[in-house]
Image (tube, rainbow over all chains, first blue to last red; front, side, top):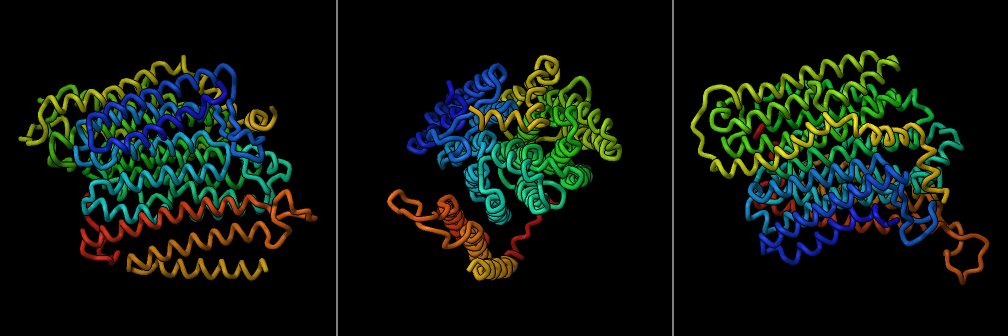
Amino acid sequence: MTNLLILPILIPLITAVILMFVSKYVNVQRGIAAISTAATVAASLVLINTVSRDGIQTVNLGSWKAPFGITLVSDMFSALLVTTTSIITLIVVLYSFKSIGIDRERFYYYPVVQFLLVGVNGAFTTGDIFNLFVFFEVMLMSSYVLIVLGGTKNQLREGIKYILVNVISSALFVITVAYLYSVLGTLNMADISQKIAEANQPGILTAIAILFLIVFGLKGAIFPLYFWLPGSYYAPPTPILALFGALLTKVGVYSIIRTNTLFFYHDAGFTHEILGILAILTIVMGCIGAIAYWDVKKIIIYNIIIAVGVILFGVSTMNPDALEGSVYYLVHDMIIKAALFLLIGVMIKITGTTDLKKMGGLIKEYPWLGWTFLVAAFSLAGIPPLSGFIGKLMILRGSFSEGAYIGAAVVLASSLLVLYSVIKIFLNGIWGSPKPYHGIAKGHARYLWMTSAVLVLLAVLYGFGAEILRPLFTQAAEVLTDPNLYIDAVLKE
Amino acid sequence: MEILMAIVVGILFTCSVYLMLSKSLLRIIIGTALLSHGAHLLILTVSGLKGGAAPLYGEHAESYVDPLPQALILTAIVIAFGVTAFFLVLAYRAYQELGTDNVDQMRGTEGND
């Protein structure tokens, strides 16, 4: 099956179109959304299997030969991310049944989530830089709708800022692609890589590399460009927040990794040095935010920024070990961030507040929720043998052997602060003396907990099964360290 | 010709930045529209202007223009159009709900204690 890698894009697209016609029948929508997202997960699992067996998969759309038409490329890195994205979307869809509210469900919540899945999976899969822009826009357009869906005052206000920032960064993306095209005369990512290698990356291309870093840094929330994230992500309800926090910034991170390992790796002393410094500053700023707030949503939102910094620091060293660690940590972070957002969503539903000072004592009535949260928190902070530890270990080993000691020290210190920030939620929200709550019924909370517990379970298995999954990550990192594998797969058929 | 176009693109960007820095929401949206116009004009310019005949089979010319940037612009225009339309509707809705189109009053303090 050569067309296999289109399925994770095509299934949600068709589903979204179908769902729009049945928008007033909520139960039908739920059924179709759940089944088709499960089908997407199945297709992406088959894709991982195929890629691990036969190597990089490519499809030339419309049968136009590689550098001329649009190519979709699925190496192990993108296949892993597509699978993780699909699994997270499935869980969030199941969670939404009892969380998002009937009004939002009737007004195209499920179709828009499917469109978001199209955009994210497409961005991970495409092998054409302009097509990447198009999938970015599909993803962003869905996120615009999701962020204002429901139309509360806060959502509208934050939605406007979110859209404005993203419109500007999209315009910058188009401009950057135009510059790149005028220099190289091609849009195919493998061809771009080849032509940059032939030209040995003159100064103009390094300038374009920095422009790309700015564009993707705005989406991925790295140091000076993360300013919009805490406010905007705070506005929508938790299932949407979980999708945004787990998927959207990671598309930016993926694009930074792709451009920096496939295109602009010739002048690493300049571009990767900048990336490394920005990554460290990102971690520091994220930590400051995560410690400062007493609002559960804000604390986890700032943890997104810390994780982006950790992943990009691993990439900036360009060490094979650290790259493998970054890939592992990226998948880990997507799963655990979604799980944590869904879990604090349960807490918010029960207590009716996001303020930690008004919570407390949830462990008495909801022990299962409390312990699941603790496991998720430990996994986030990287307590061995949970998954966060393994990713950080590989990143640190790589960065030590490259002599990047300051960054490694910051990553280590950040783990402690991350632990402090989530344990603060545990001690003040879940421990402590119970208060009277007038939130949702216990059975309702149990359903929400069960769906989010599936993700925590996945994260735990991901940590314990790291040895079994290792070959997949080694294969993913191979392509990142040796761009010729990617180029050969696309251009030589 | 290219230099003239580059200046035009620069003027468009200047105007859009000026508009986006103002406080009225409508001006900001017009600013984003101008920004995307500038970006589209830029794509057209970087590929070179008046380089040859239209890239069709029937034209027996010495050289042809590159059709790809035009395809890119078409895609980008459609996307910019959609986003601007959505942004305008959102601005109207926000005006109804919040009672203001001044971004200074949209600062918001909820959750920023």
